[in-house]
Image (cartoon, rainbow, N blue to C red; front, side, top):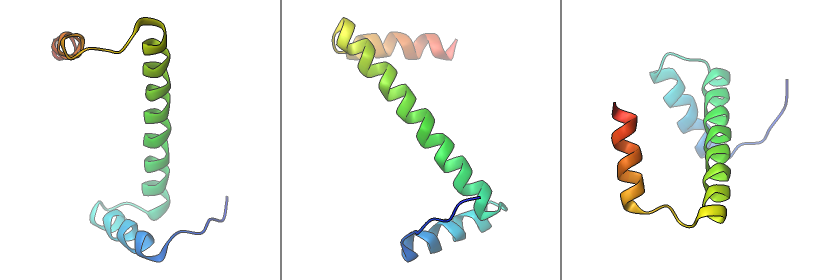
Length: 70
C-alpha cells in the first residue's frame, strides 16, 4: 500500500472513468501504471533496435503490421 498525491482534476476524471468501467479506483490505476510500464519497455526495445540497425522505416512498419494481422 502506498500514498500518493494526484492533481484533483485528474483524480476526479480517473474516478469517473473507473466508475463508468465498473472498476475500483485501485484497479483502474494499477492497469494504467502497468500499461505505462509496458509502453516504456517497448520504447526502450525500439530505441535499442534503432540504435543498432537505424531508424525503422514506414515500409518495415507496414510489413510488421501485415505479419501481425496474420
